[in-house]
Image 1 (tube, rainbow, N blue to C red):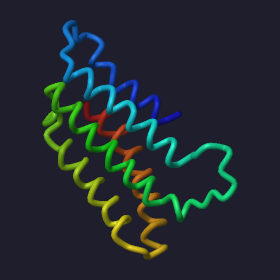
Image 2: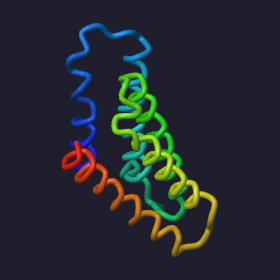
Image 3: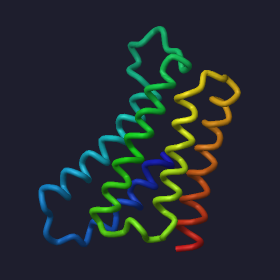
Image 4: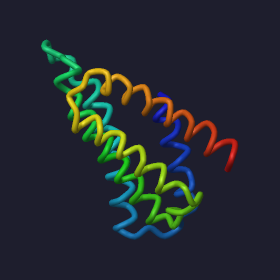
Length: 133
């Protein structure tokens, strides 16, 4: 629910875009679908009887990387890639953290990566986007 609310907030500036190009529309659609992919990776079909998060972890992390990439793309197309100036630094830092989770098999690192990502997303949306904006 939290991610959907943040997605709505992120998408809202597109509401005053009077003329859409196909490229803009495509970027926004792929961006929205990337969030669906993340949800599907995390919460697969109910018919799966052998659900194992450790086995699905790579798919969840890859879907996060894809969503972060599409977020940067839609932000760039919107013309706000450096607004605020530290946005690309933050997203690349988050992507680097996910890459560490993909490259290691250490269970402790995996646990810390998930909590770190959750806390960073809350900090970004709650502090940076709300307080500092």
